[in-house]
Length: 297
Image 1 (cartoon, helix red, strand yellow):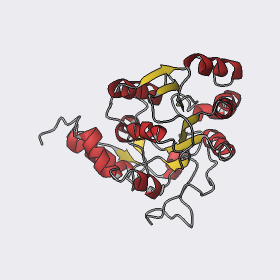
Image 2 (tube, helix red, strand yellow):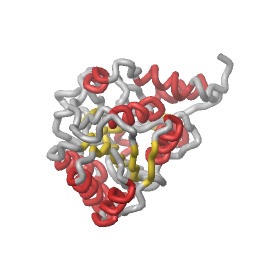
Image 3 (spheres, one colour):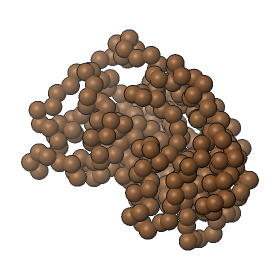
């Protein structure tokens, strides 16, 4: 699996997505680990600016955490399709191509929101979508562009594609945090999903770069957790007076523009490479709820 580039260090990371959530966290992890890193200043869709960054910085690895998810959510992409293509498709492919030309591994933070439960992967069955499965969810334009890019990037042997889902971190004030989002909604659906605990998985992605791992990886904690299970933990650990209301997918569909992906990802490949990886519920408690606990233990 390892791409034959970039030796064993010293490492120098070039990170795109400085103003983004994941990009910002990557810089902090590099600082804590004493890894030399620089944020790219080039625009992803501007090939010359990327080449200039790489020639100037001379990185050992490139991380792409830049992308358009839409603010406040993916509904934005439905009415901004060209902007979504420019960054998520043209930009990502351009960076991958430049990195390949320069012999560099690119760690690409992608999405697992390109699948939805189906007859072969029924809700509650424990049968997750594997890395080699073909995306089956095109309910949002955001997901559609991400599936297109994933398919094209399969041809780039220097790219490590990490399928992130419903990212969660210990920063419960961050509006991008899945927990923060659903805690603020008037009503939530209640569906088990695979999710990504960034506090545990982002350091693993840095280790993946050091190992020069490439190809597609389901970048989620093993197992699934439902909206209600998360909010029950929130109530038990953070706010004992917290209450919420559920509604159905049909009711949700009336208040959103684009459909949302719900799925379980197969975590076996990542777990085999990193046996210490915790299940989603264990990781939630260890990395998110215990550090933030406000209720009596």
